[in-house]
Length: 453
Image (cartoon, rainbow, N blue to C red; front, side):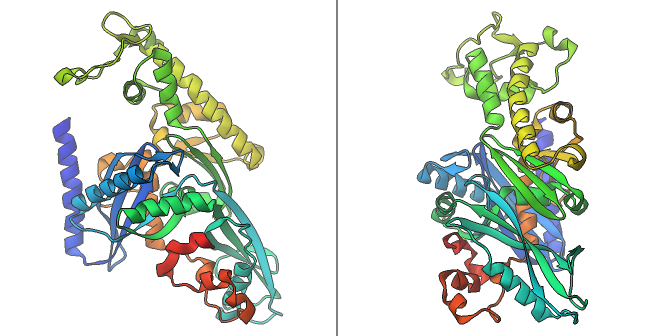
């Protein structure tokens, strides 16, 4: 098994280097996903023909992060640097700047519509720019950080769904702008942890947007879909429709709570509970579970004189527990999380005739049988979301737990337009002289200071 994994890893690495060798790389992107369970990094290249190839990736156990917030700057900085160095080693190249994902920090998604008069004439490039600047000046962050301010689609005389209005005639031209807000201090802490690891910050990207790039098709985002990213400590529930992220709820629960429930129920150590959950756990019970006994101790526990932990509560003389008991604890804890997900979807109007597909992703989505369990509980179609097939992506990272990281690289490659980078040609002198206007005029190279917006 170990040999096959090593061979797979070697093959993926060789494939990415082969592609990179055949086609010159025009760009290289670095991405870091800072989670409460693991910190992962990926380096992706874009060839001159526009093809994307994963050059290297790496991960390590998280430190200094709790529920998406930095709680220990020194520990978080060390873990981030370590994860990036592992990715650099696999890629055979280094990066100086990275895109980072933000899963906590009180994320909030809003959509605003702005219109200007055209008077029936043909719409020119200057009209679109004027409209976007009008929309830009109407953003009211109320003291919070603006992570994104992106035009989703345009409207002509109230008619929605116009991708490119240039060259068309209209009385009124409008735009729907998606704005993502976050609390400033947690974002600054996250950026500082990355900067202390001797890396520049290209941009801070809301985790639901990054995961959406990896797990959702353009058609799904247009028709309507719910994306549920189950992390260790936080579950983000987001609803997409009309190509935009329309609603977002953060639930302070995740797969780590299931691990804690298992550890508490059997009186065992947390790492043992995590292994039992991942290796033998399931969200769906089967008739044979009562007959299957699972060893609490791992194969290497107790080696070298290290303590292997206490005898599990209710275990037999070989320290084994019935799989049925494990699954019972898991399903009870999982039901609480799914219940909160259902409440969040209802609050955002994703119910009844307006409901659609639910996509589960994140490390917590790797639990066996979770899609079937969730589909039954929510009475909605459910599937597991993974990153698309990418050249050079190791098999171990082609899982829901790394979908957000891959999506972050895909987001970086597309680099969607942000209305805060639009030129100030039509902006009044007073507005341009304000701190907000000055921030908008900064180059894209200074995205890292947007938290002061």
